Image 1 (cartoon, rainbow, N blue to C red):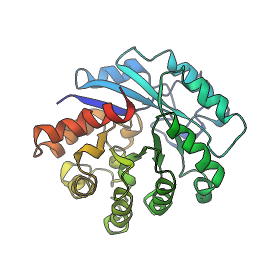
Image 2 (cartoon, helix red, strand yellow):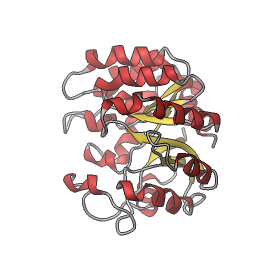
Image 3 (spheres, helix red, strand yellow):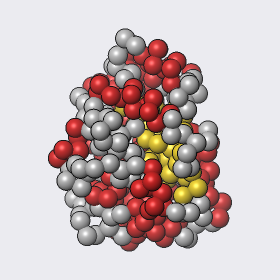
Image 4 (cartoon, rainbow, N blue to C red):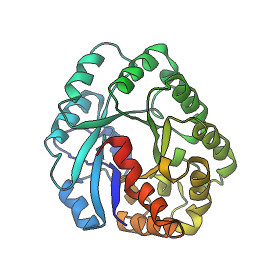
Length: 277
């Protein structure tokens, strides 16, 4: 089973600013570059999509321009670039420039901004421009914010959305019951898929396993179906819980009981369709 990684971060320290890593000891020093990723994945990943890494606001355009030069190297097929739909100033120009930067999607991290930001008419109007360009928008929110995600997705029916990190359930805190209704409501909307990624960092340290994650995986599979699920590594953030090789192994275990067609959809098929790679 060949995986397409739809959530490959890079930390290119010295070229871009990553203030958010200052409080994360495992990521606060050094760079995490394509060669480091390749050494961990070998032939287990057939292709990847770079995911914007939450660089400092002043650098988000520089990041996309820099990564554009890496597309086509080391299996990187495209990038999900950062964007600011809440701002009209410069939005159209950035959208137009990204057409030449191998951009196959956009993201605005929404758990680090006020909840009402994604609910504004400006945000939604600009998001519809992304949809008109035929590109998906990744939603990164906490589980408590899933009603906000539902409202945003429903308001932009012609926009394809990708719900990152399984909707961020609080695995460590026994948050299944608080998370599941929001997932069901989001999954009921046709213009969204879910990304099997990032969930290990929500586990209690030392408890990450296929057994721990199986109830969450099963609920996502039941809610979305395999044709609306795709996979991501969330590297190097995944290192905070378990390394990337372990996450790949857990993924294989989670998918083992599915049919070949179902495994292929989650591993690569949905990614190819959504990100057009």
